[in-house]
Image 1 (cartoon, each protein chain N blue to C red):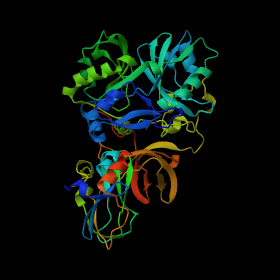
Image 2 (cartoon, each protein chain N blue to C red; image 1 turned 90 degrees about the vertical axis):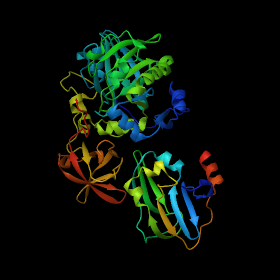
Image 3 (cartoon, rainbow over the protein chains, first blue to last red; image 1 turned 180 degrees about the horizontal axis):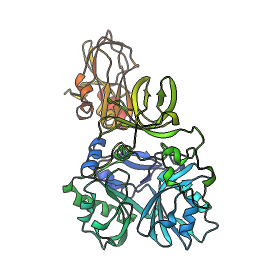
Image 4 (tube, rainbow over the protein chains, first blue to last red; image 1 turned 60 degrees about the vertical axis):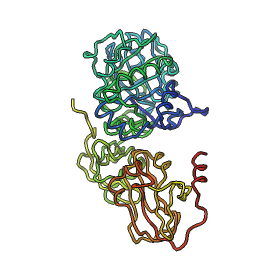
Length: 377
Length: 124
């Protein structure tokens, strides 16, 4: 699931998740995230990260935005409004896609779920809620379709890690599944019920692990969190904050809006050229989607030692500055520094030796293939 | 482990244990918690002359980079190699095994905070 850490344009006071009281009772530290006060950690970033790799973590991602797209030409509308061919997504499945500007830059990265023949659900980044809403609405005119921002009606809870399926399957309060647990595929969803509400179980995530994202009405969120937590405790489930979410997604090589994606960057620069179906007859951004000659491209960099390149740090080839780090960390799972960086295309080949300038010192870095970490299947 | 009530503090969230002209320095539990899990510590060399208010080290966590300031002017007489080898000591024992360095000082600066004043600072 995409994420974002830009500041919001909403000038009002920080927003609270429907799970805020739950986080407070768990002793969470909070951080401002796109205008929301969200848990950054409960105990330790590293312990929460490790739990997701080895057992499971439960995340509150209710700050993310949800839209429904309904109408006879919903599929055709999304083919025009987004970079992918969403009309070809089967009911019950999901697809990662991009919302582009007319000039081919990225307004947001989204996951689109086909709920029915004529109904889709889009999940977007919290900080881009208004931009996504405006862009989708502005593109509806030629289509028999209606777009609704339903973000305030729903909470979103992610359960990620190798034990995620066992934990959710063991949560008896989740019932009336439309698809049995052992038939739920990656990038697909199932309908279920929790309490008096419908629950959508999507086998998607943003950690590089198996896992689910659970969309539920806000008034059921605390009860769902509690039921899943109670079941998961004996299987190693821990509450996990945004710090762990960021280190997990970075190891998995997943882009974060505002770091690896922006309106100034074409999808192919971020390694997302495959997400764009250029063969479509018409879609917003089509004529401008190819990057300029020599445009910087996203690469993975690995280093030795413990000192990590961070967002904005220069990348050097010899004495020339050839790019900058977009996200970097000492990888908790791999034990060495990793970074994503936008660099000139002539130094982007795997194996190229570069340097990262870390606060006046140089650390050697090698271009590597992404992801840095992938789970054993 | 030192009684934190007997320590002096700076506004940069460092604690000082003053023993005559020898000052041992670490960061407070408040600072350690704000940083998150510390994964890298760089300290100056023994024998380095340091000036109060200048950056003498780095404390890097999973999420951010913090700087260690020299709270006093003097000469480094000891550094804690254990915390370089195992930076998690900063989180698990900020006032004990997670100490950073010792500075020999000709004179103590004015303006250090006592425990009550520091507690007031971080509660604001």
